[in-house]
Structures are given as C-alpha cells and as structure tokens.
Amino acid sequence: MTTITVDEVLKGWPDKDYDEYDFERINKRFPIPAVRRAEGPVDIEDLGIGDRVANLGTHIKTACRGKTKYGRPYMIIDMSDETDRLQGVMWEKDDSYLDRLQDKIGRGSEAIVHGYIQEYPLYSGKRQMVLSSIQFDGVIPVTTESRKTGIAETVMQCILALETLPEPYSTLALQGLEQHWDRVVEAVDPESMRHKFGGGIITHLRSLLKVLTYLYVKSPNPVWSMLEIVRSIQPNAVAAGGEDMVIRIPGSIDHMYRTIAKTQEALKRPGDELCPYPSFVAGVYVEIGKLVTDKRFGATTYGAESLMEVADDIGVPYKVVAPILDLIVAKPVLVGSGDTSRPSNAWVLNFSQYMADQIG
Image 1 (cartoon, rainbow, N blue to C red):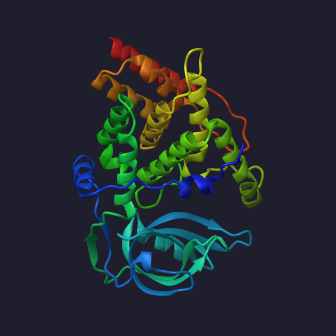
Image 2 (cartoon, rainbow, N blue to C red):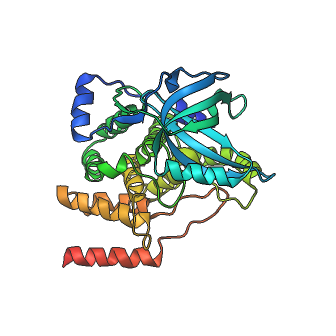
C-alpha cells in the first residue's frame, strides 16, 4: 500500500470551483468578514523570497512567544491582508521590547511592517518575513474585500465541501456552523496557541475537511493512511522538541486520526460499511467545540451539546447522531501516545444532566 504524506493531502487536493452566484448565496447565509489592515503600497501575494520589504500594510496577531536553546527571545506574528497570509518573526535581545509589542498588538491590530522575506524552513519554498520594525502610529486602517483569497476562499471551500454531503449530514454540519458563525470566523482556541491566525477555527476546519476528502477518495484504508501520516511527522517533531514534547500536528491531523478510527469502530459492524459522513460532521463540531469558554467541561461538551441541539431542531433520529457523538467525545491522538481513554467523568455527568433535562 502506498504511503500518503501530509503534504500530499493538504496541498494536492484541488479546491472547488465556484461562480458569482455561489459566492452571493453562501455569503448571504455565512457572511464573510471583510479584511481589515493598514493601508500600504505592497500586497502579501506579491512578495517573493529574498525581497526587502518596506511599508507593508497588514493586520497582525501574536502567534506565539519563545526562546532559542541559547536563550534568545523571539515572537512569531501572523500577518494578513486581502491577498494572502504570511508568518513573521521578530528577534530581540531581551523580552522587554516584545512585552511592549505584544501589548500594542493586543488581540489584533493594523500595522505597517518592515523587513525581508526568507525561505523557512530551508528548501521548503515557503515564505517567512524577518521583521526589523513594526509601526503603529500614523497608520490608516482600510477595509477591503476579496473573493478568491484569504478568509473568503477558506469559507467558500468549507461550505462547498459540506454541501456535497447527503442529508441529514449536510444540514447538521451547516446549521451548526450557522448557529455559531460570528464566533467561528474570528475564534481563537482558548486552550492553545494553534489558531491565532487570520480566519481562526474556519481555517483549521478547511484543512480538516481536505484531509477527510482526500483520504476517503484516495485511500482504500483511510485509518491506515492517517496513521502513516502521523508516524511520518513524528521523527521531525521529536527532533525539534524532545521525546517528552506534546506534539500538536497542523491541519487537524491529531484529531482526524482518532475521528477516522472511531468512525470505523462505530460503523463497521456486521452489515454496515465504513461511511465517511459522520467523520465530516464530527469534524465540524469538534471545531465548534473549541469555542467553549466554560473550561470546567471542555470543548467536547460544547461540541456535543451543539450537535444535539441542532439534531433536535431538524428532527434527526438518534441512530444517526449517536456515531457522530462518539467521534466528538473521543480524545484526540497525541503523537507518540497510546492514550485511548474515554471521556472524563465531568463530561459524562454533564451530558447525563443534559439528556435528563431534554427528556424531562
């Protein structure tokens, strides 16, 4: 069996074509936010490796802070405009400037940035901007629209993919997104730093749907292929962070391996065939669950309860919902870990109370 790599999955699967009519009808139900940035003469899509960049008008968010093994502090910054996104890195001798910079950025801010474009990781063909300075004073905020790049493209690809599902799966997924849409398009996962970039949860969802679509179409054994993807990433992750590092794989790979595995467990019973549709719906509600603000029960509770509410609204029978719920409440795979534990007692108690309330 041929191994499928994560790069092949995320890059090789073609996006769906759509026209003006598709954009208008989807934008009416799922309003696509305009892109806000500082006015400037340079667009991110036009920048190439090796370019010196001055006066790039962008919107910036802090992605993460860290230090090298030699103790030099740095900040990773996510930048976006209506044409594309770009990761930036700011190096400093001490933390004091980065502390002040992070306060100015807050939850996101318009800024003019200066620096140069390098290739990172080396030989990857990917761009990263090494920032020499960030200017907040005197910037002119502008709001721009884009239909084929950035968040607009991400929203369109997610919705178009979910519209291809048969009923009731399509309505379950789409109505769940619609119910939480305002938070979905701007959300940052409160329990990690992984989603602090333009588009938030919806960008993560797009990668998740691409993984599922590719594997179910291309692989005769999606579970095997997903496991191979996880294993292929592990050596580099261990080299970077040590064996004790908890690895979070980009593109929802960690969640998707468990989702696909649990789909097989839930549905491949005598007389049943492995079906991808619960995986898609579960993936949507896993992402919705990350919007949770009540840390006592966690994201699985929020995602599962949202699914139950939508299912109740549209009259979906429990035999359809049950396998999806089983996928949502399964813990994600952490690379290098054999964790197969079931939901926590807190989740079970909370969900039992929810069911009792519904039954009356």
